[in-house]
View 1 (cartoon, rainbow, N blue to C red):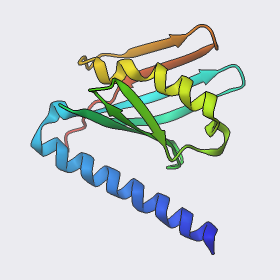
View 2: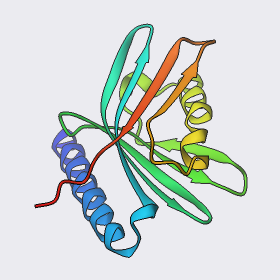
View 3: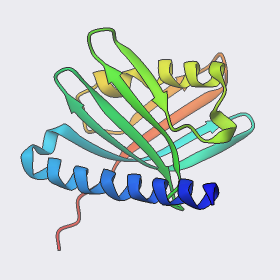
View 4: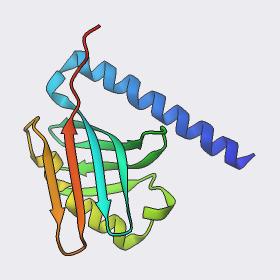
Amino acid sequence: MTRYLKSYTNILALVTLFLLAGVQKGAGEENVCRYTMEISYPRGEISGLCIIRKSEDGGALSVINQFGIKAFDAAYDSRRERIRLSNVIGPLDRCRIKRIIAKDLRPLFQNADTAAIVIENKRFGIKYKFVPLRDVEQ
């Protein structure tokens, strides 16, 4: 029963995220950035979509893989210049790993460009690659 409830909650969160991204798009295109994302590390890689919503006081980020499973969410506080991760999948749900990811993703919120972004953590061999998604007109 609990397993189905968690699955339902994840699907509901995903639908809400895309609806909010669509609402924000009408309000201000520059506030929401969508990227294809790839995080490669020595033991594997995670790839999928990354949606970033920026505001004056901070922002939020959500990473979803190709199967629709949320890898993690992040909230950015611009006053403290701090990122807090939440809803982290099992393999990444370790205090040290979350701290490393949070520190590495800080430039995403500080960077205003819509160009491709590559962040490399040479100490731990982690490479983050973000390529903007193009809007498709229908």
